[in-house]
Image (tube, rainbow, N blue to C red; front, side, top):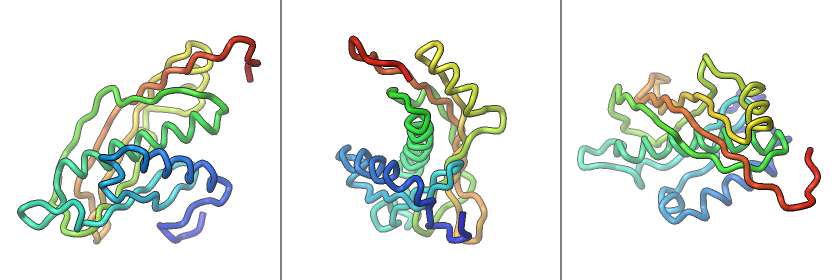
Amino acid sequence: MTSDPHAFDHEHADALARLHHHYQSMPPVAAMDVTVAGYDGHRLRLHAPLSTHVNDKGCAFGGSLASMMTLASWGLVSLHVEEAGLEAEVFVADSQIRYLAPLFADLDVEAELAPDSAWPGFIATLRERGRARIGLIARAKLPDGGIATEFTARYVAIAKPRAAGAMSR
């Protein structure tokens, strides 16, 4: 990956276009003015302008930060499920948020796998059982590189039923 934080691997361009379209198909998300800012196969970055998410104190609204981190983590799981050639619905199972500092800048959020989780095991379990869960971490960054907000969550993927006569991969 290039050092440009808003770049993404062109190998993933089609998947990211589908993800962006999916985000825009949800009216509350479309109103958030969320864009995919980068993806390197391991981390998904989303961006939204502060002007759309400003609160009465002039900083980012806590609910917007929570939504952005939920969306980034959901998107990362969805991208890995698609990359594995599987079809599944992805849901957030539970999450925790720590607000560490007010954010007086655009919302830049990055989601990645939690240290105690692994994609191969998650995908294998989803293939075998039709259901799997995985831990993620997302962070909203301050302009100086510090962390404004940290989000930890577990996501669940549930395989979609295959059509009768469909071949398995």
